[in-house]
Image (cartoon, rainbow over all chains, first blue to last red; front, side, top):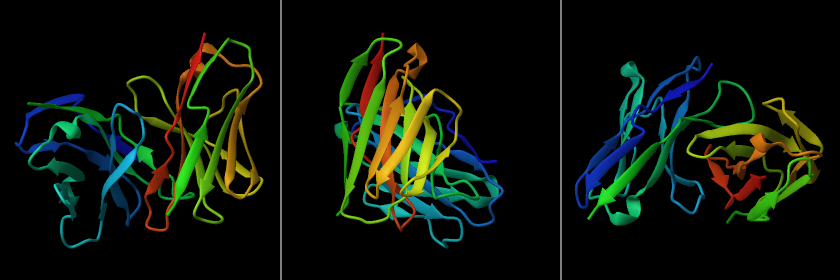
Length: 115
Length: 111
C-alpha cells in the first residue's frame, strides 16, 4: 500500500529565504513518480513539480526543486527565494501501484512566508 | 488546454437533503476523472474515479455516489446528506504526463 508522510504541519520562512518541505513515502511499485501540489487559500490545487523514480537528476521547475533521495524514500520540496505568494498548503503525492493514475496525498504542510 | 468547471462553488445544505455537484471538463476527450474530498485542515481523500462513460469505481464506502453520463461530465450525488459530508470537493482530470489537473472546488457545508 502507498504511504505518504509529511511531518511538518506548519513551517515559517522569511521572505527571500529558501525553505525545505519534507516528504517521505513508501510504495511497493518498482517504478513510480512523486508529485508536489500547492493549495492557496482559494482552494484550488496547483501542480508544481514531478520526480520520476528513475530520473537521474533532481527535478527543478523555476524556484522549485526536489531533493530526491531514493534510498531514504524522501522527496523534499525546496523553494528558493520565498515570496509572500508562496504562503499556502503544500501536498506531496504518489500514485498507487495499480489503478487509473489517481494520486494518494499526504496531509500537507502549511507554509507561511514572513515579510 | 484543459479546463475543469465545478458548480456550485459554495453550497449550504441541511442534513437529510439531496446533493448534486457537477464537474465538466474541456480541452480533452476520454479523460480519467476523479472526485476527491478534503475535510477542513486535512489532506485529500479519493472518493470515486471513472475511466469512461458509465464506469465508476468507489474508493470509500459512504452515502455518496457518482455518475458519468457523458464523456466530460462527472457528477457527485447524495440522496440524504450527513453532517460528516461537509468538506471541500475537488474534481480532477488525469493528464498523460501523470499529474492530476484540478477544478476550483465546491465547498459544501451541511447544517
